[in-house]
Length: 195
Image (cartoon, rainbow, N blue to C red; front, side, top):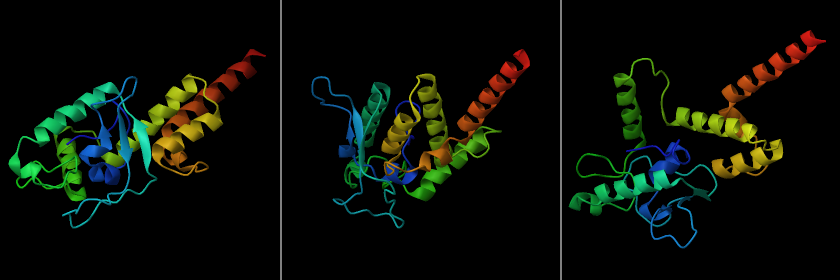
């Protein structure tokens, strides 16, 4: 199990668990075509999970890094090595235990609980925290590259699967905003003291 973050893009845990193999265009790409993930509600396959993870955001196409595409390709091969896994609906992320059913929300939480137990001091580590980290880093990168506020909002809403005018991304980038506030105030005080 892995989370789509840092090497490409982070999408919410419900979306991750509802991804199918065909949602991940990571091979057999046309000339110049970049790998991507297409997020959407599952309307084709029966889902054996008690709590079905529904995509809470808009369907969208998300370009991903070549590194993430390679990782997904490796995972697809591992996922298809077992007859039991191949008999499951084609959800991308399966449980690591027989009969290798699609991974549930509670099982995903257990994965992160195990990581936290092994790494003391990690604190509130989980899929949602990774979403925050992704949008904070994206905001920092776009600020450094000189993107306008309108451009940043448009890009973040597209990646997040929110409506074009949504301010939802602001909930995910509070630390980056705080850093920029401190930077702006520090510069302001430096200019005042230089007068």
